[in-house]
Length: 147
Image 1 (tube, helix red, strand yellow):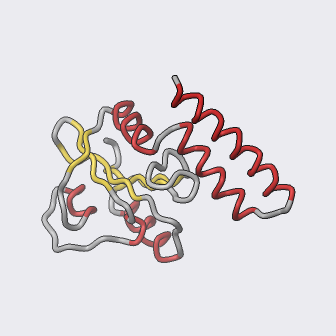
Image 2 (cartoon, rainbow, N blue to C red; image 1 turned 45 degrees about the vertical axis):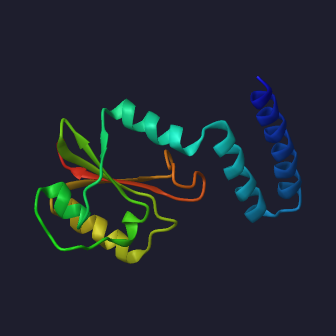
């Protein structure tokens, strides 16, 4: 019970700091404070576990080219920029989904997403549920179309 009260007090302190940062137009500090609040409200590991459970997925420890892994092919090591903090996910024991959590994406990533779509993959980019650094990274999902 004490830990919950301490966490609630810390969240309130951060809320006040957030409001002060916003009043100063210090968006960088406000964003960092917001990230701390989100981590206290929903620990990053809980975000990841909850997301996997909702989708019926299990994390794979496979290595190598993530797109080749998803396509069921063996390829030499190659990790695209968008796969920063990347994880591979299986469903029913089969490769199902790639999740990258990059800090940013650029024109090369956009071109790669277009090529992936032409090759029969679905690409989804959002800010939630990023568990690596909530509020600071993107959440990129790539899976075979129709799965």
